[in-house]
Image 1 (tube, rainbow, N blue to C red):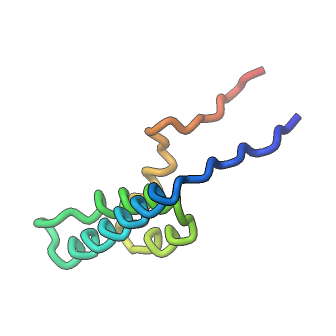
Image 2 (cartoon, one colour):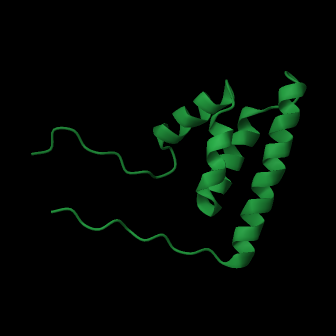
Length: 93
């Protein structure tokens, strides 16, 4: 039987503010990287911003995923699940 989805633990207001601030700074730094290619990275900053905003405000992630070249790479990284996401087992009987 299907179990109900796990409830997300609420963040402390200070942690939420810190993640929002870090996400905003990373968006600004990633945007600078669009205008100064080969000198300033873009993908890494957008990736950190997406990870911060997924925890605090998931609605803010959509515009970051629509950035033409970086958005596809971030979506690929999130599907890869290197940081503890459970993958479904195939063929378990």
